[in-house]
Image 1 (cartoon, rainbow, N blue to C red):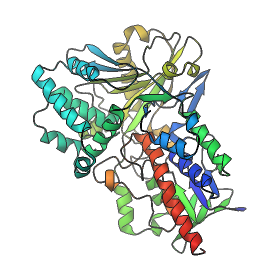
Image 2 (image 1 turned 60 degrees about the vertical axis):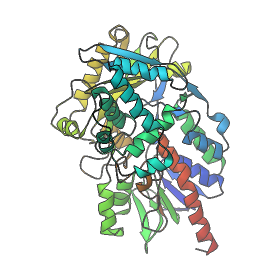
Image 3 (image 1 turned 90 degrees about the horizontal axis):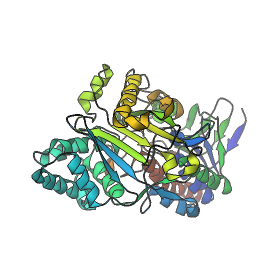
Length: 492
């Protein structure tokens, strides 16, 4: 086998790996990024079908005022390429008698009126409205010190401390645990949820011109401009270890030598498959196996023959549409909730170039178990189809095609390999729950010299999935740079 030598090899061209690699290349390290797919981007791989462009999953919400994307692009010297377009969004709420009520938030920062309109949709009394306002205000106004004190408190525990909350408010917090933290409210840390709500509630959320894949390409360009390499269709079969130190990686065709290997393939696949359990202490292996995964997400794309969807983002919920531990297990038995929480993004609302003139594409879906073998996915997707027609009877008549039905199986094939039963198809990754987020986030340093992790599983904090991956890339790169300089200083 031919051998190639580098300072750093990064396994996986997701956004975390690309940002990390591009920064290290900019700082003068010889970097190679290897990915098994024919396109870079990982879970944010681009979709281009019949003139429509977008993401495989409904993706939105880059804060214009404070975002890891902004930090990454600034450090890479390409901040002028970060063109973010704000747009309107609609919260759809199904009242107890079946009526769907819409709360429209115009482009820009969320105003107090939007929150009050949401409370009206919930049909809260004046007393309940005052309590709901107090509880949400407490969350978004928490100081860093207050947040830190809640690092090991779950959303369920925190909600219990607030007294008897109106059912719609409880449901809202449970749904946001699914939507924003991609977890179950019994397990998600209130630290994580409050931090995310603070960032996104106080920002102008936007969509990138050209889609997320444009951002991926911008980062790839920065990587290459600084001498870094991107090798696609190069599946890493093994991370090579000698005498307790990484020495490179092996694909089926080649060996790539490097004293530093950064895995963007997920912490569980890295430890249990790419490196191998035999190289780690048993306690560490058990720790890695026990890290709680995010929920999965299954979705589809609707093609409209006319631009009938007025807004950029649609969120549909009810007082009973969240997934908790009980419903998570019921799904395993094929029991689907009568109403599911739905999330949809209309890319052409933000950038008309994302669709042929006079048409639209809507990426829409719901949360599910992360099991690549989950058998309830088709039933969930059918429920989404039926629920959309109930929510938008006029607009549904303009759908000319439904396509792109994907779920945890496709996520696993695209990104992280399934190495444990029921896992691999996580929507964002691991470490979204109490004990594994905030200051308890898994370390970016592996217990083997020269092994590092990047991506959602380690390093990032306080952001939604994609943003947490980018945050990890920004925060992990300096740690790796320091390790490289220490090795260089001592001639290793």
